[in-house]
Length: 282
Ligand code: SIN
Image (cartoon, rainbow, N blue to C red; front, top):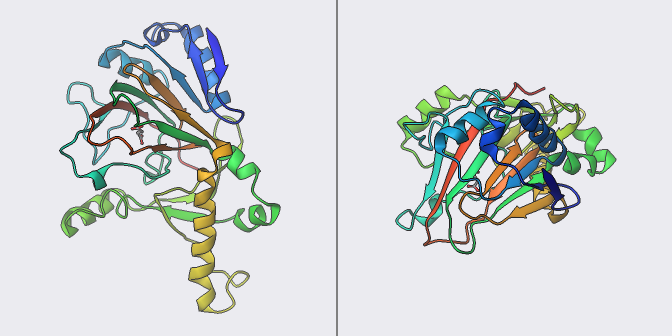
C-alpha cells in the first residue's frame, strides 16, 4: 500500500489496495482507518466493487444510516443514491460547504462515496480541514467562540422547498439539534470548527458581556457566524478531487466539510454514499 499526500493540509491517495480485501483483512482495514484519521479524506481509484461490498466495507467503521430526504438503494439499506440527471432543475443540485447531517443529534462519523458515473470533466468534490481552520483562527476569535453553541437545521435546508406540512413533519423528526461551535474530535481529541451550511444561529450568544442593547445581538451574532462559516472557503485548507467511475473517497465527517462542485449540468452524475453513524458532539 502506497500513500500519496495530495496537499499540505488535507487529503491523500491510497494506491495498491483493493477495498474488497479490507472487508475481511483486519490489518489492512486498520491501516486505512489510520490514514483516514491522519489525512481526514483518503481517495482510491479503480475500485470495481459491488454495492454489497461497498456496504460491507463501510460497515467496518460502524452502523450505516439512511437519509430522510435523499433516497437509498432499496436492496442495500444505508447506501444513499446521489443521482443527478439533466432532467432535474438546476437549483436542486447540492453545492454548499457542509458537514454531512449535522441536523442529527449525532452526525455521521464519516462516509464512503463511490463514483458510479460522472461527466467527462467537472463535478469534482472539494474537502476542507476544519481542525486547521480552527487552529488558524485569531486568538481573540477563539476566545469569543470557546463556549458558544449553535443550532443546525434540516428544516431550513432540505425542508425549505417542501409544502409546510411536510416541512414541519421533517422538523418534528429532526428538531434542530444544538452542537458546540468548537467540537472535540472523539478519537483524536483535536478541536474542530463545527459550523456549516446547516447552522442557523448561535443559541447562547445573547449574554450581558456580548450584548449591550438588544440591537447588538443579531448583527453581532450573524456576522460572527458568517465569518466562521466562511473559513471552509479558504483554499489553503482544501483539497479538490476529480472523479472517474469507481473512484472512492472516504472522509472523516467530524473534522471536515465538503462541497460538490455544480459545474457539469446537463450531464449525468451518479454517486453511492454510505454514511456511518457517529457520536453525539461535545
Ligand atoms: C455529499 O455531499 O455527501 C456528496 C458529495 C458529492 O456528491 O460529491
